[in-house]
Image 1 (cartoon, rainbow, N blue to C red):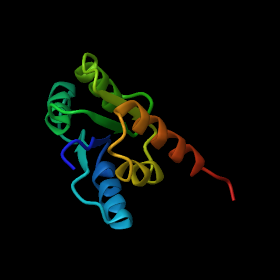
Image 2 (cartoon, helix red, strand yellow):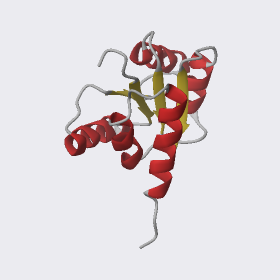
Image 3 (cartoon, helix red, strand yellow):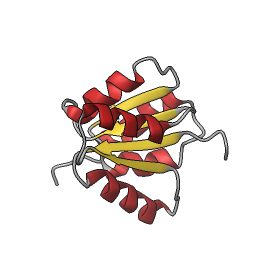
Length: 124
């Protein structure tokens, strides 16, 4: 699956790693998602971490909050990258959906993941 999208999860603290691990356990798909944490770095270093995780190919970047250091670093670093889409408010449902639809174009995979993540939010 060499044309598959890369998923990058950017969060505060250890959240990204935990989400990636859980998505892999649920889906059985490994290597589709990379975790990036803002722990122990300034915005410049975080931008470097994001750029390294995204790499040259198309990607969808999932960020924990719709504001804050993680989103600002992602937007600043990837502003000029046409093949990358950003989704905020990451949750486990959207990551599981994403790993099974990585052959879609980045904009379609991002939109689909955001819908799946929104549908997963309920008050039982």
